[in-house]
Length: 141
Image 1 (cartoon, rainbow, N blue to C red):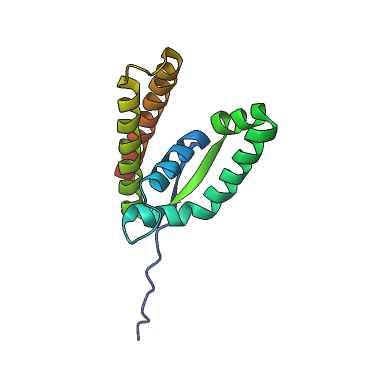
Image 2: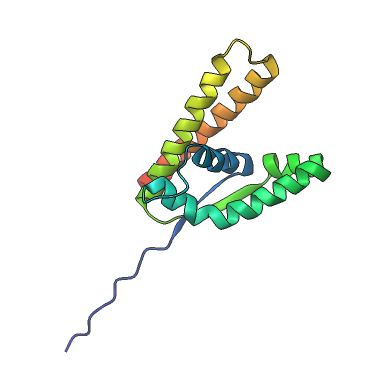
């Protein structure tokens, strides 16, 4: 008599990104109203919400009392976030594409300062690298 074999779920994947990149994605979802509902972005936002809210509070606190620590956390630290399934990658890639498009629009505005343009160019380049890495990792899954 053969016993039914329980199919094991593949191990959960994860993605690492800089804190500032994570902040950009989560703020974009909040600004665009993708925090609730049944779409893939809302599902991923909700999956990451607890860690996001803790990080956001920490960043707010540091920005008020220790700007150097705030800057180091934003620019030097990474977060590792669970990717539960293919739809998470799709939602994250869509968010990154939207953030980059919004940043490019700001960068094209005549009133945008030279310093802001340089910062935006850096962020756009790094977000595009992140997108490429996510796409590459998704092909290996």
